[in-house]
Length: 285
Image (cartoon, rainbow, N blue to C red; front, side):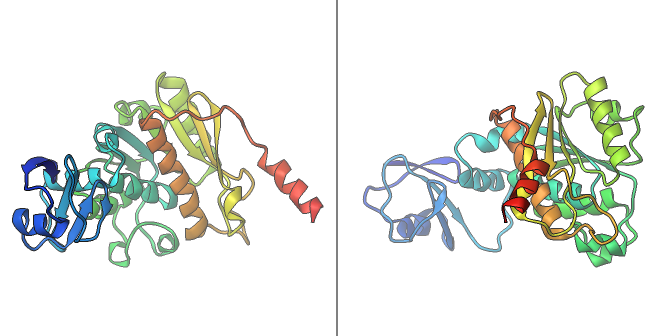
């Protein structure tokens, strides 16, 4: 009977269980994935099944890691993600979380840019650790991403972005995530990218401060080359700071939109007026 084991062909006797095949092909394997999902050891294997056998605690080779990641994705998805190149402008609360999410799904190349250092107030929402205080964020994030997925290529630029260097920094990035805090810097980046780079698509964010309702954070298609994540209302200000849960919701929206764009998923060209919706909800109560 022909099957696939860790992305390689294998021939086994008919009627064997997953546990029996694991004992033959990878003794000691204690994580058994069948056709993309963990399965019981007693499951009988069929012709053409795809198996991934893992020993807990074993660091896999690049090929094995890719095979294991592919096992958890829809067939064909991982190969397309691996070929993708994504830019991230700013690696604070949004950008560091977007980078972690994209590294975990196996996006092949990440270009990150930021000039700031990790400081104590960052730890309430950003993907850094207390022993990284004082390090440049791009260097600290490179270290963290290597620990998550050492086979993702990370191109780090420790500098302040401005209209003159943005096209050069992100020249090989068809998708760029805007992850700045300040409104003027957001506008500068988006205008530069859309105005200077004809084919780039931008995934920006606005309105994610505080701890407001989860579902007011939405992804809107503003134009053919611009997507906006947030509620368009909740700006950071005294009494409404940036907090990990809501920033994380927005970052996940951005990361998932990047994945959708890489995979060619279409979005409706409808802009939802969230401010009007919120007002109507308040009056209805």
